Amino acid sequence: MSELPPLRALISALDAQRVRYLLIGVGGANYYAPDAGSFFSTRDRDFFLPPDPANLLRAWAACEACGLELTVTGEPLDQPRDLWLAERIVALRGLTRASDGRDLLVDLTLVMAGFEFESAWQARREFQVGVHALHVAALRDILRSKALAGRPKDLLFLATHKDALQQHFGVAPYDYRFTDS
Image 1 (tube, one colour):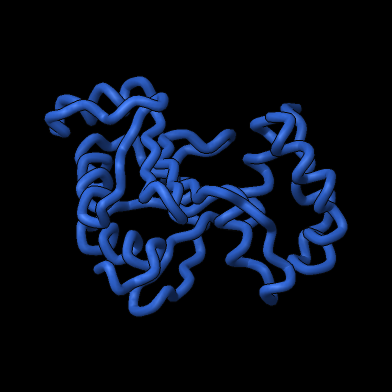
Image 2 (image 1 turned 60 degrees about the vertical axis):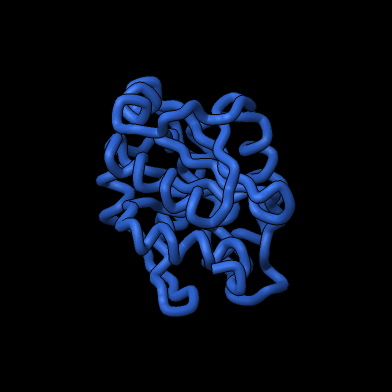
């Protein structure tokens, strides 16, 4: 797999392990861009996983197959990486970070603000990456999740890129401004 660019190699490994995931966040939003000039800068990729310990275990195996280092809260993911450990991470809705130490930084998250995995899965879109389908959350869901998360960096992204989202992605401002009412 080393001949493939790192993200393509990971997608291939996730597919080989039958991992269910959705690419979310800015990395996911970029797949909806009409051209390369419309991409948004991001350092990492966020993969939203269902709260399924067996699926998480397969995701870890895929990352390991690509030579990625796995960490939780900045510390190496414990060994053995077994179902017991995956069950604990799922119960805590913990985030696992996978990195090659150079170009690829991936967060395996069990949380997407405002969404359960199955509902987001039903609305997904698939993009071809080589011979594999990349599962990406719906753009509207990605933007709504950012608004609902309410993190300063997400709100800044939405406010800063409001015009670009409307012009290049066809998403009007009212499409991603949500309230709890």
